[in-house]
Image (cartoon, rainbow, N blue to C red; front, side, top):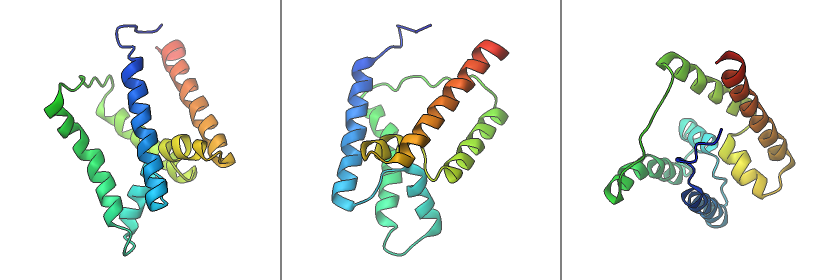
Length: 142
């Protein structure tokens, strides 16, 4: 069932445009892919001359909600699970990004826009897995 009260196509479209522009600018100006797991992975490995842009990118991700609070009210955050399951889910996503050679932003946004066959397969697989998990949790277990 669709929650029509929370259906926000205009803001979703605007967010998609902003993400698309940001990834295109990063690719055109720096020759880099805006895959979050790869950007953060590069901060962990610390290669000289490759740290500043990665730190700036991650800083922007972390500072954006704080800056948004000055412009308006943030939507409420509602997490309907316990800390243990949330940590397990985060661990599963982290392992998946390592095995999949990238994350949803790298494959789904950047890879798909470049028509990368590997990213098309990865995006199909993680979207299918996500839909299957939601179906199982909502209709089989819940």
